[in-house]
Amino acid sequence: MTVAPARRGTESGRSVPPPRTDPPSWRHRLGRWDTRYTPYLAIAPFFVVFGIFGLYPLLYTAWVSLHDWQLVDGAQGFVGLENFRELFGDPHFWNALGNTVSLFVLSTVPQLLAALGLAALLDRGLRGRAFWRAGVLLPNVISVAAVALVFAQLFGRDFGIVNGLLGFFGIDPVDWRAETWASHLAISSMVMWRWTGYNALIYLAAMQSVPKDMYESAMLDGASRWRVFWSITVPSIRPTILFTVIVSTIGGMQLFVEPQLFDPGGTATGTGGADRQFQTLVMYLYEKGFRLFDAGYSSAIAWVLFMLILLVALLNFTLTRRIASKG
Image (cartoon, rainbow, N blue to C red; front, top):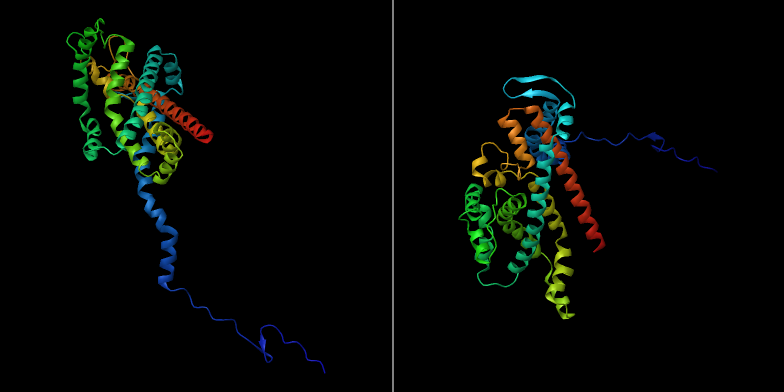
């Protein structure tokens, strides 16, 4: 006798209804909504603020740069890329660009190297470590206007302390505001004095997170302090070094306050000396936009500066990553 197989979904020849599913409760729906959307709400304030104070001004500046736009009379008409064509043929623009690059290199490279060395000293067991660590941040706390006044006196032509020291060694006095390289060195020293301690504390925080057993193993192998520093400390804090390089690049290419206040007589004009020997791109933007009221031309300068900063930052990032990969 053969028995017919039972049909799926049946029991004793009777159909079985599908299992009953209750609708999700409001707590379940609220928890699912919280898991899905709360992260977006948490980061939304940043994007809202960035859109209002970052993205919108950037796009509006691009729109203004395509117009003959005077701050006094308003927009005079669409001119396309005429402001950019005029800018690239402007010798004052190329002079300001050269000054900006020169001041950036002279102030940033020694500054980061000095900050790295200072952080290594502060990382050692010094007496009064809290005092020294707080002291290196003091130049960054002081007002930049006060710093500029002090350095203007230090680099004075007739009664400056620096020229007095040079005369002690038989060197003729230097007119720090009249000569291009002399003014660049003076302004770079001001920038270095302000920001070296700040970067040193960033490096110090990174150095203190390096595992101590790595140092102990290197010491047991007979490595010198110099070898330990370059083989363990520097490779371990490469992400921090990359961060300071990018931030210093942005700050160096936007240099304005220090050269603007270095020449008290030319503060109102923004020309950076009688022959524009230390006029930066931001100073030239200030001159065109807020002294000559040419918003279209100054907006073109701002966009070119933005692209230059982006290009230099990407170049620094690429070089730093390549050096890190080879290490």
